[in-house]
Length: 606
Image (cartoon, rainbow, N blue to C red; front, side):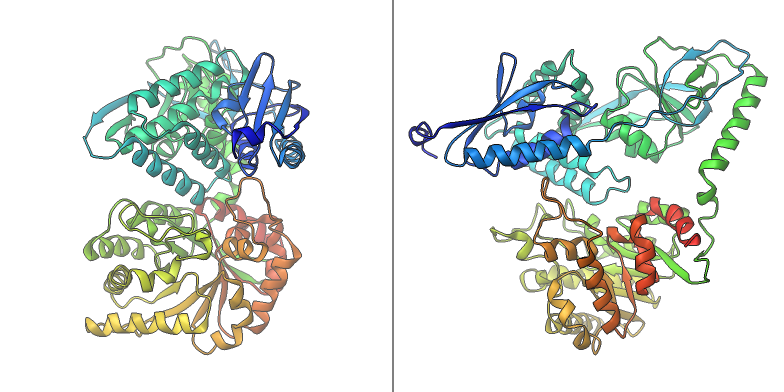
């Protein structure tokens, strides 16, 4: 809007008070900013002597707003009144839903050795030597600009959001929004690093100071794509990690290591690092005291103590407590390989949503009976994979299960590839994505299908096509698949073909689809998105995932389908939905590996 015109509109304002015990931190700030950006008016947040742009995540964070702090929101422009009303409603909702952290109850202890009092992050007990947090740095030059590296980092964060297994996906979306607010055209890496330092400095002394790790994390994401790599050095033997703090992205690496526990010096129980440590169930504590130990120590996050020089009796006691704690908390996990049968004898087939080779191995360990959704995008993220490269990855994944459903490449909408160009679209979720790539990039789909066919080695397999909207699209995709097989003299009679039910038009075509498909897999995430016309990654608009509308749609599919039906969307692992899904007749559910043991236990009690 022309600045001169803006001046003629009256200013609108409101006063807002932070009521969340966590303060006005990164996740709610990112959602608040997303709403502010939908208005053309100039919007400022005023606190004390500071006045900042309310459309920039970093600016709002710099106010360091804590519980009971009151600030003024001011808007000036033609939609100022609408902006103030919408932002006030958004803010109130964010404060109400930003629930307080449940405090861990402290157990008693009777250790013989002297103890160090600590603050617990995640309950549990670890017995292992301490190793300090160290990293190894390397640099491999490339030709990417800062803006290109930032874009790839944003895509990486979005992928983390998509593949989140801990119900903490909003952390990654908030980091993505923060990165977006910090990268400017023409910036150099040096300028960007200086800006990061400045932003961290604004947080010093406030409750949000621990959010500095989010700034450092996004800096590392960007630098990685510029060729600067920083790898955490971890022991190949069981260990307790001692660090000033960790980056949120470090937690994934720790989950794949032999870490037994974590001691942090400079964080809080509400930092994103702490949230992810809890989600990963890694026993963790906070200690501001200097710690030195050369032998195994006891980290007792149940009693909130460290035993730095334990006696043999202390070790025996800690092992017994650890076993008891595991027995209590992991009863469901211990039965993860057992069938999931309801109290009335109905057996539910619990499968896993798999995103790469590692998650396939993890799915097997977590008790999945098969793969209900293999997302193949992991092979295509950074470069166009060869047929051999794809075949090798598929073979490794297929070796772990006898029941496997592969989804062909689903690119478009919110997912892009750095090496292919799709037309710029005003509504990419309604544009070229999923099976529509068959018309824009047929060679890519042909190569993928060939790799899948070669990898099966006559093993029974299901292939499903995403974003099918009409019966004709499915017929065309299946015919294309057969042409690929015939071209290479391959027998694919052992392969079944089906569709992802995610486009609303399919709801009205089930009788026709019954004539041509072998199975249906309901992608409730996208189906919900399209039913309610609300983008599923939208930071402020929300859909009730348990809405009767969704269950009515599922009921319609099940009533009219004459072919097997499964669910591979988030609804499949929603505890409040399971009983309803079983009553509808759904007996095949596919979910993130981490949720399998818990959901199986829940099913056994229905």
